[in-house]
Image (cartoon, rainbow, N blue to C red; front, side, top):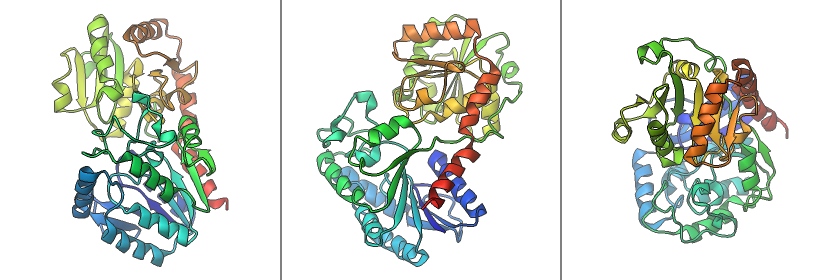
Length: 396
């Protein structure tokens, strides 16, 4: 089978998922090409197609920011991309993220519909069925169900100076519906339920959880406690790629004022700008691409705290469990689907009193065993998850 994978980039969480699925499919004897816009790692790989370049992307992005028309430009680069796709003639197109202004959406879907291509579309957020935003739960918006307009998040990614969400919702509905053979995949039941309420409701929806590498994320001993003078302390760990209110950084700052000296908060994924907002009693560790080091920190922690307000799945929750660390998280998106009663607590409310009480209870009572956490994490083994994709691809 010839498989075409499409994503914004070939790095980060979605890029990693795309590449791992492609690698497994290749091992199973399929011919796979990955397509993404040429932002970095521009090696001349015969198994890659670059969609435009940094210049075409920046032009598309600036035009979108001025008029709110997302996915309406990059015509030349998309024409050139589709010329190569036609030559490859894929049996299956696996779509990941299409936002961030790198591809002409009507041209792509016109090719799909005209050539009756089979499509699997993995939704990594909610962007595919809104006028613009990838997340809307934090602001409690439900306009996406009937037609976006007057967007209160117009300045958030992907930001625009003009609110054109009413038009874009209608255009995206026109582009994305009417594909004869399309299956939607979501990494959580929560997102699947939303997709079934959107204009994508006529497509079959399958849940395939995101996977983690259990050869990396496992109990890993280290000198982390000694290195940071944390012997005898209860470590509360938070991990995020971007720290902001959406990810609950304000909750950690408030907890740092409330909890006594027997607790120590450690945040991973920070930067110099975030450091300036943090009190001195929070340990800040800048972003690390070393997964073994991250596993060491997960293992050293007594409790993983994830006060996120918007989350499709909650991969960090699964990573913490795999390292034997219980999880405290908000009832957000797919987060409750990752843990059970023996591996953590889901808070239905995000008031800081409840968070503080839950932290003290979980750390003092010690009702969560390392083995229970590790067993739970096995459900999210990346090998199993990527094989689910291959089974879907091969099931015609």
